[in-house]
Every structure is written in structure tokens, then in C-alpha cells.
Length: 245
Image 1 (cartoon, rainbow, N blue to C red):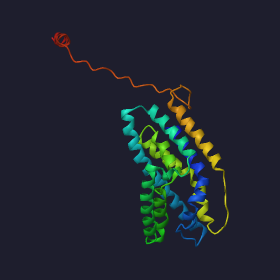
Image 2 (cartoon, helix red, strand yellow):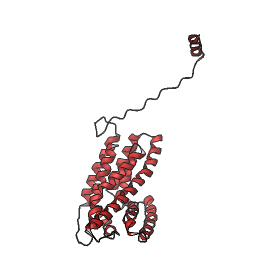
Image 3 (tube, one colour):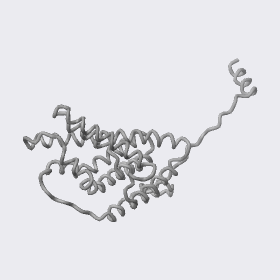
């Protein structure tokens, strides 16, 4: 589970530059009280808390699915599959528009837009947190990457914590952007560089599932030995009865 937390955090860090370009307009439009620096920071913190809460909730849902899959297969193969998916998604453009994900992306995008509109009707004290909740479920290729990593966790709690770590990793960009909404600046990082970082994470995920016995990188997974249940025999019952006499 520790590796899932670390990889989730690293995916979140790699997402920062993506967030600046894709979520920048949302962060700039964040409905917070800007009458003072203290109130602005408090509003941004509530916004990020809402995002991390939503990510954790998504982690719980994907963890329930992963737990169900692990009942019929080993976590070893699930980890290898997740690593392969991370590498494929890292080098693919617009993952959110893949055939199966495209319809889900469009459906959720329209749903989230309605939620954004509703947040404007809430009292100012609750707007930023609600805005963060909606932002957290907004379809995004790197969120899908985070969820893929969370799928390889050993249990539901691990998946939730993995997505919480992902949210914490995205914190730098999503904290400072709303505070400097009036400034004009751009940060550009090569997509290839981000893809390389994600490929390393995916490769380590595959190694983790290969059961090579390398500490921390690919620890040995000891199978659970099942003891066979033996039905009681008549001889056993006779021996027990004679002992009682």
C-alpha cells in the first residue's frame, strides 16, 4: 500500500503542470472572499479540501471494484495490468476521449457544469468547498491515471488513501493559482517529460507485481496457505469417547 501512496503522490505532482493549463480557468474563477489575504487563503484551502475529498471518494469506488477483481485473481496480475495501463495512458493524448471513457466524460462534464452553476447560489462560506467537490469529479486524463494506480491497492482504504495522496500532489498548482488569479503567467513543461515520469511510475508498478523478491521495489508475495478441512472419522470419535471415559 505504501508504494500506491507514493505513486499516487508522484502522479499528482506530475499533474501540476497539466492542471495549470486545463484547470487554470476554473481556479481563477474560484468563488472566494478576496477582501483580505487571510480570507482568500482560507477559501482556497476549503476548495482544495473539497477536491481531495472527492478524489478519496472516487478512490473508494475504484477500490471496491479492485477488491472484487482481486477475489477472482491475484493482486500480482492486477498490479501488472495497472502498470501497463499507466504507461499506455501516459503516451496517449486525450485519454478522457477514449471510446469507452468518451461517453462517461461527456456525461460527467455536463453534470459537473450544472453543479458549478448551483454553487453560485450557496452562501459564500460554502461556495469554495462545494466548488472543490465538483472540481474533484471533473473528468480528466490524469485523474484516470491516479485511479488506475489506486486500482492496484490491496484494499479499499488503500485506494482511498492513494487518491488522497494524488490530491495532495496536485496541491501546489491548485493552491497558488486562485491566489494569483489577476496575474498573467504561463508555465510550460514538455509533455514528453511528464510522460517519461509516468512511464517510470508504470514500470515500477509492473515490477511490484512481478514478485521478484526485491525489497520495496518488487517484494515477494507469499501465497496464503489453505489448510484442508478433514471430515471427522469414526475412529477419531471412538478415541475421543474412550478418553472421556
